[in-house]
Image (cartoon, rainbow, N blue to C red; front, side):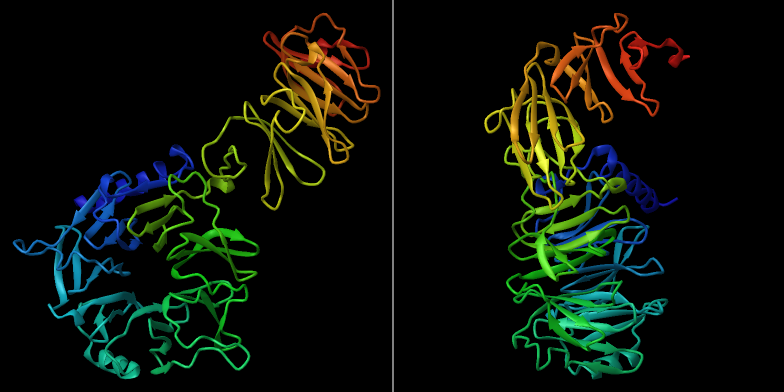
Length: 531
């Protein structure tokens, strides 16, 4: 087995275990100090075998989850990169790895780690803009910034002169810019001077795509990226100076996004697979000044991306390239900063930090001790030392502590909700505070028997709360008259832990010496329940 394939399997394992659930949901960041060849990243690409390539302005690297292996030009050695400024990397369906630089086109030999020139020259006209494969897998389409298109046979790697001449006649120019081939086989060619749809099979090109009498489009549009939204078939068009535009197949022309996003300078668009949002997939965009943003397909507006636990601010700076790997992690090239790897949401779970300012980013204050959802759908979260947090369905978060409420302290032990929607908040060695929308926060009880409450269950039929405690056994609170009493059964130990009220209305009590079942009708521990 070759070294390359050993590396491939190692990368697959490391991406799963080091970026996945074992290492947690923390964003990882790599700079030049960590081995990244250059912080100016042009392209991040994962080939079908799982190798992740990082094309920079000072070399080409692949990343194994721990280390970067970098290739650079060496004039004293044959078979090296022809230029350290790497603009494109692409592996076709046959496994051939194509590399583009301002000095031309090369193929990378996976076995010997060497580069073979396919199209090269010192003239800047050989600058490779993008590399694509035709839908039938027969040809490789090379776009350049000086000699138009070059079409290569995918099997022989020879130039297909006939198709090359035919395609260049369609564009009538030597600057082909970048390309994108959609699911219908239509090639979109975009430059800083415009956008064209090229039907390679039919030999047709359409450059009159912009706007209509109803929807005016600026004359100085500079297109940076084109991507297809798979559900609707709409083409999302990012621009350097006017945000996002949409080509709607039903309308037949390009229109501005409805959400008013013209103030964003878009560098890349990533449509996340396997992650749904508001009836459609997540769409992330890399911008020139505002970092990573999310494009809402329903409103066609740009929102803040929900990236948590990041060592650097993901909402600022230049993001020129985005990529989703085979495990669902997102890789972002932060221009002049480094490489960010954002882990996927494991099995539908998202990490949420409880911070001092209530924002879901930053350092977490304390561990979570209790969670309850009220009748309005709001989530209440108690923490050990950080106080109480309220998370509304729309994402708004509010923090409550002893400074702004009657809470006895910030160590929340237990939360329980009664049938009226009132929240009972137990604090460690501090008693109970209540909250309701009508009354707000109120101090409820400082009874010594409730100061060490650890768990609770609510009996809606009796309108009572049962508390397990460390020192007072099980304490029963009647909400009708606010009376507090310890269960009279002397067999229940002073230190109790969890409680469960079953469908037969029996109260199960766990303690250090085992499990008990309390019959509320007889007022005694029923040993038959545990048999």
